[in-house]
Amino acid sequence: MAGRLLEEITGVPRGKCERFWSLVSGNEGILWRFRDEKRESKNTRKFDPWPVFFRREWNRNWPFLVGFAITGTLITKFSLSLTEEDAKNSPFVQRHKR
Image 1 (tube, rainbow, N blue to C red):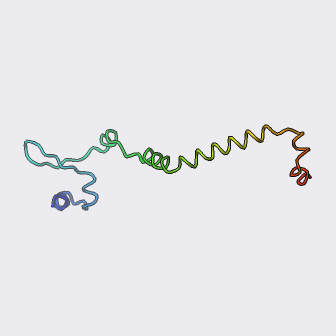
Image 2: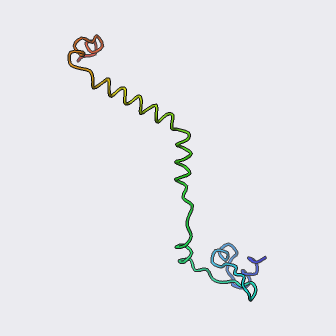
Image 3: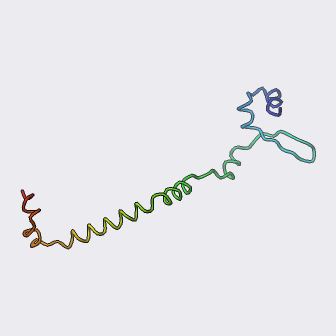
């Protein structure tokens, strides 16, 4: 009802009209006023979905991440502990040597 009334008063189509006008109720009754978009955009906080996304994904994926970290640590530790002498004695290295 209010959108239709506003459309009749201003001549602006309903969808665009509701974007620019807001309803103000005061002691004088109900008034329509023009919105100040700059002020509203400065004071209004937008919803940030990233914290929700990261919390949900962390709860879902932490076992995989921990498993990758442990596996990577073990592979690195054992790879760095190999010496040239171990490579000479290894049948796997001898088979795949170029």
